[in-house]
Each structure stands twice: as structure tokens, then as C-alpha cells.
Length: 194
Image (cartoon, rainbow, N blue to C red):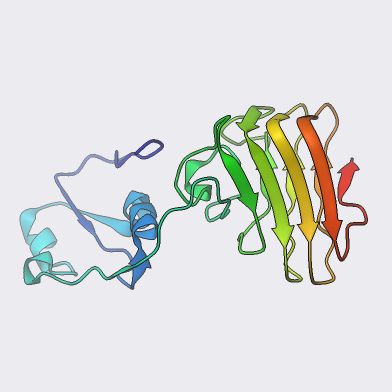
């Protein structure tokens, strides 16, 4: 799977997964295992063997059913479009990906954030559906000098709730799209230039 590395900053011979063991989807288990803070380093075999959990007793890692959805924005780690762990399928969208940014997202979606993986970067996708059916409103933000190439339609749809749903373009940002469709209960200020 792309975008993952279990390489540690400190070299030790003994590492053990000590993170959460509550039920999670396969996708969430992959994210947990990739999180360096979910691992503990030990200086020797004794420390490893006495540290919890005791993997020799075969603890259960409960997996909840649920497929990874290609192009679904979760914002689980931060707001950076280019961070693979923010996407449900742990892959940054390509020109053939249909992107969905909906009310279930934890954070807004930023393209080209300063200090991010690709500051002032260029993002690609086949289409974007930015939608909400609650008061939670997922923003799509194109930061300074960033580019979003959408090879199909950008649909901004807010069907319920009182919050404003919008796509923002900062100075120098470019949104290249075939068509834009804005609909719903509060479409006012749906697309704005900063």
C-alpha cells in the first residue's frame, strides 16, 4: 500500500504494537499500525516479554466489516489533501478518482497548505461531490498558488442544516473544472474567492 512506512526514528531491536485494540475496520487497523505512537520500543527481550500486551497469549484484534471507499475524504490525520491517511482508501486521488467530501469528514480539506506535503501543489481528480445533509459542513480550500484540476463536475450540495458549505480559493489558486453545480437548502456563498 502506498504512503506507509514502519521505519522508526530510533533504532531498537524490540518493538511491540501497544496501541488501541478496540474493534475497527481494516482501514483503521492499517492506520493504527502505521502510527509510530502506537508502538513501544524495548531495550531487551525481557522488557519486550514483560510489556503488555502479551502477544503470545493471542489477543484478539477485532475487525469490523467495512470496505475502503476510493476517493472518500475523512480528514482523519489533518487537513492536507496530499496526506494519504486522510483518504478512506489511504490513497491520494488521481485523475480517475471521484472524490466525495461529506458531513462525515473530521476536518476540512486543504490543497497546497504551507508546511504540508505539497505546498502550493497541484491536485487531480475526475469529479468532486462536496455535500452535507447536516449542520456539519465540510469545506474545500485551495490555498495560495495551489491548483485543483477536476476533469468532470464539481457538485456542491447542501440538503439540510444551517451551516454554510463552501469551496474557497486563496490568492493565486486555480480551480480548473468542466462544470459546477450548486444546489440545496443553503447554496449561498458556496463558491468564493478569498
